[in-house]
Image (cartoon, rainbow, N blue to C red; front, side, top):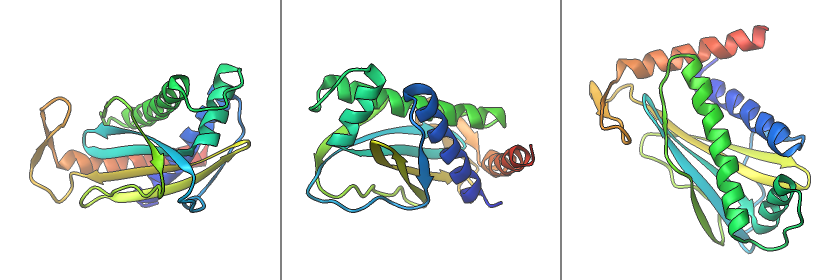
Length: 194
């Protein structure tokens, strides 16, 4: 299984696991971007993970889906985007990213998390790519909530021998990126076999 497919499989598992355990929503995660709707207001929650695998996680919600998800989290009816909605979405993104970080730590790939950021507005939910990165786009259906998940990543392979970790300032050997990819593939093959 190539690295992209391994990460996609892990990302699907993590998103479903978080929605089930945190907000009691059963979900279906599809390998595609969501329907385009430039006229609906959107909320994008994103955060970075840095280390041998530089990555960003972005969750894109319509205002309605954002309110429905946070209503479910707080067990109260929320009709309009408020600070509670922004905080709730940040918490969901943080939990998903934390689980991703844990999965990578299981295979000795250390990652550091940034704080989540939230952007609100109208229009296209396209996510800008990092130079030299891969993008995984998933559509999550967890009625009544639907949202897009984007995971952008790049390894240090093929770059200079070391690169500074954006959060710690420490040098990271690029050979660790190759090992990280292979370790992730082995872990996911092992989990499928179980």
